[in-house]
Length: 246
Ligand SMILES: Nc1ncnc2c1ncn2[C@@H]1O[C@H](COP(=O)(O)OP(=O)(O)O)[C@@H](O)[C@H]1O
Ligand SMILES: [Mg+2]
Ligand SMILES: [Zn+2]
Image (cartoon, rainbow, N blue to C red; front, side):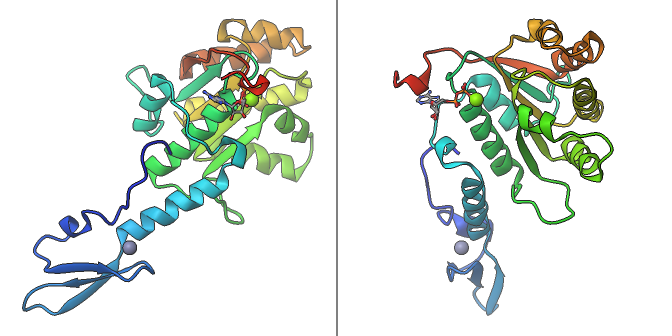
């Protein structure tokens, strides 16, 4: 959602070759006039685009709406719409220390992905979420055994249009939860679905780190190995922006 705002109505007429005039009534409908051919009505693509951009903006928490320069790997991933790159990677592994802008970058990447793919992030009832942005500690907490809601939650994480896992490795996971986390990541790996992870743990230390938190080494190592294969690493550097340093 970076870049200068411009009115998408500029240049609209070029979409309707041969039209004498193309006028939007401002409610989402166009009147197209062609010489000798009377008037025609059509949906206004510019209004549709503006509504999409507004819907995306409203979905982002206010703190993370402001523009930031995005790392090149993130821009590249957005341009590909999260589709596999030449190495089959569909994920971003955004890592760095506290306050370097990982969460903010992940939100902007998710917003740009929505804009690029024409996805409205708001989710209807009984629908697979177009975008799921979750803090991993909250997700692990919510994954409880033998619960219908848990089964739905896992399926949503597996199949969401885009899944963002914010703050992986921040808390001690239960063995049961980490096995579920593996099922989620493995599904997205197998189906080449887009994924964004933010963490303060370098990917080479993730398995060891999670085991250190008490996760059994098996699932922790399998999660790390999937992420290595499916993600492009994005290193965030700089001061802790929360301390007021710019
Ligand atoms: N490049 C930047 N310039 C200015 N402020 C930033 C920048 N990156 C992040 N911030 C702000 O700094 C704060 C911390 O960013 P956040 O993304 O939460 O960090 P992290 O997730 O890495 O701990 C937020 O208020 C965010 O809007
Ligand atoms: Mg964060
Ligand atoms: Zn319009």
